[in-house]
Image (cartoon, rainbow, N blue to C red; front, side, top):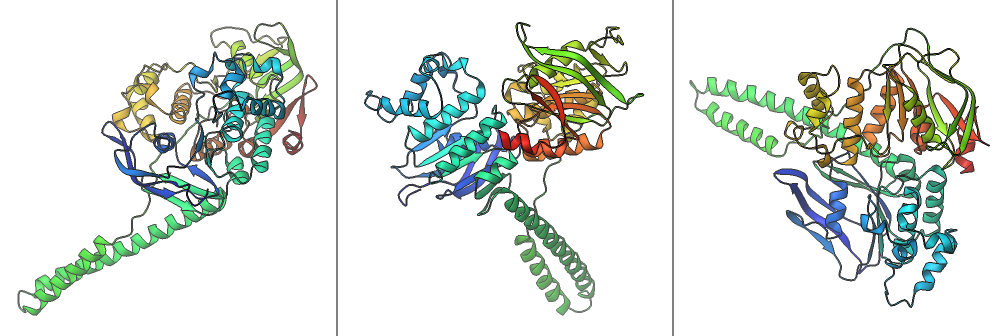
Length: 507
């Protein structure tokens, strides 16, 4: 940003009702690309809305120069864009609305490879990934901002579009940005400064995410050691003061020493190091054992579009064993999610359909859980507690314990699910799945809304659990870490591959 263009916050606090979302937040953006990282519910999207003037702080101030032009792409596509033609949505980003700059829309559409016919279609007819790509491109190229703010820019993007976005970012390297994302590889590649948003404030580091996180962890560890040493010194001085008090009965000079020692204790207490302690938020999977090692077999199976009008790809043979974590790779539209949906629809725990000749054969002991990336089945008006208790076999006590372990405050568990952030909804979905005691997981973009700690929890749980898992993810880091096997949809066939890197590079 130029010297005149300034954006930041000073001692900012925001509450939802009586509950604080964030407090004591201070930082100022510079001309670099900055990552804003925080756990689910830390208030990242809320903070962006405050920076944009959509919400008002309860305390503190937004520091923003009058001349500053900001391009902002929120996490959710504005609903009013849906029925509008794509071209009209892009024209809304132009600084001039008199039609004199409409040629710039034509240039952008040409650069993005969008045909004239497509530009006249309703915005809602585009995939979620293309909607986000076009809104980001429009905000940057048409709005001529001094700063671009992106909230979860890789959500709904497949790998090819993530690579397209990264290429575009590299070609516009002079534009400062503030990026909220949980995609670790994307942050590592595209940001050079990192701000961690936590309940103890904002912590800024002038390095990319991995180095920044390591520095923050080292600082937290050093603070914890320092606080422990200070605690031991306070204990020593308290014992000394107690002895002086006893001796003072016979010699008044020890009363003076006692008071001096107590003053030293007060000074240490007043200046005592604040050590960060993360709240416990365990994301747990059920580890269900299988009597037989094979959980699922598919043979001569064809995946089709939902209406059955078109074949997408064929699976000649695929066996999924307990302990297998299989990543399904493929370009956008090849049918990755269709496969997971088809398997989920085929499984019926009440039916005796385990035919040895069937194209989809389940182990009779299978208990299947399906994570849908849209989380469309969550009853948004139902309370968190009632949602978990509704699971067959779940008890009130068990549900309360799980919610507490996952970091949901007691005051929120009787509130509606609709009040949760998307990341918190994802955590709740995993809690509900745990209660069903599954041993076969189908996960469609499970990390889309999970914060980085949640992703690491999920990776660790999958590794520790003796369960079978098929998953689709555009998160390259998660795919490399979580998977034990890789299959790719290639030329309308599902083939097993040794290494995902050639696929990643080809995108």
